[in-house]
Length: 216
Length: 183
Ligand SMILES: [Zn+2]
Image: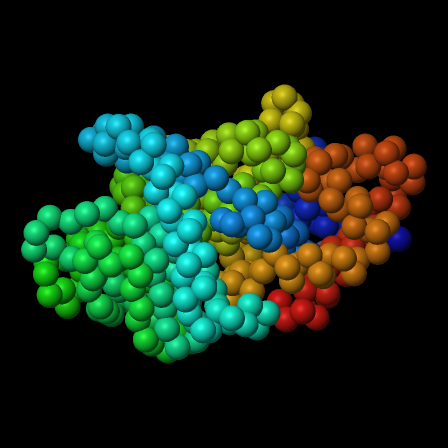
C-alpha cells in the first residue's frame, strides 16, 4: 500500500465521520491540494449521506419509523412568537384530536382518488406539513388540510414554484372549511407548493408570509 | 429585507432563520425532521431520546443558524443529527471527528436532484448488496460512533483490514446507488 492509499483510507474515514481528531487537520489540508482525494471525498460523502437517508422516518410508519406529530408542536412552541405559544398551550387536546383527524383524512384522501389504487407505481408522492398533507401526482396536486379558521374576507391561496423559477405562480384560493383541495397541473417541474392567507379573490403575488411551505 | 420567502433553497431558509422567521424554520423542519429523527432513532434505539435529539438539533439551528456554513444541507444536518445522537449515547464523551466540513468544491457533491432521489427504500436495497463484512464496519462507525480500533476489536479483524473494508464498502455503496439511479 502506498502512502497515498493510506491517505485515501483516511479520506474514507473522514467522509464517514470516523476519522480520529488528531488526523483531521492533516486530511483537510491534503484535500485542499489533491484533486484525486477531493473527488473521492465527494463521492464517498454522497454514499454516507445516502446511508443516513436509509433510516429516514416517515409520518405514517408504513415504511420506517413513525414521527409523532406532537414533536413538531413541541418544537414550534419554542420558536413561534409568544402570543402563538399561549394559543397553542390552551388547546393540547384539540391538537391531538386534530392529529387523529388528519391521519384519518390522509387515509380517506388515498381512498377517494382512483390514482391511488396503484400504490406500487410510485407515482403519488406524499408530503406532510404541520396542518395537512400534500399529495403530488403527475397531473395534479391534492391538499388535505386542517388550517386555522380565517376572518371574513380572507381565503387561503395556493402558490406553486417551478424548478429554477425565482417567483411563485398564483394558483387556486380556498376557504378554511375546504378539507380537500385539488389543483390540476403538470407537476413535472414543480419544486415547491406554498399556501398563504390572502384577501378574498386571491392575489397576483403573495401579500403575507406562507403558512405552509412544502419543498418537493 | 431578509430574503424573499419564495426562494426555497436551504441557504435562503437559513438566512431567513437568522432574521427569526419562524415560517422558514418550519419549512426546514418539514423537509428534514424525518431524516434527523430517523438517524437519532437508529443511533439511540429509543423514541424519547430520538425526539430529544431531533428537538435539540432543530433548536440549535434556530438559535445558531450560522452553524450551517453552506454546502449540501441534507448532508450537513444528517451529520449533525448523527453526532448529536452519538454524543447522547456516549454521555457527552463523543470525541471523534466533528461536523462535516465546508469543502471548497464539495458543495455540489449532492445536488437537489440526487437528494430527491434518496428514497430510503432505494438506499436500503443498495445497502443490502454491500458484503456484510464491509457493511458492518460502516454501520458501526456511522450509527454506533465506534472508532476504527473499537470496530477492529469488536469484529476480531486487524485495524488495517477495517480501514480497507470501510473504504471498499463506501465505494461499493456509491456504485450500487448509481445502479439504482442515484447518480
Ligand atoms: Zn490525495
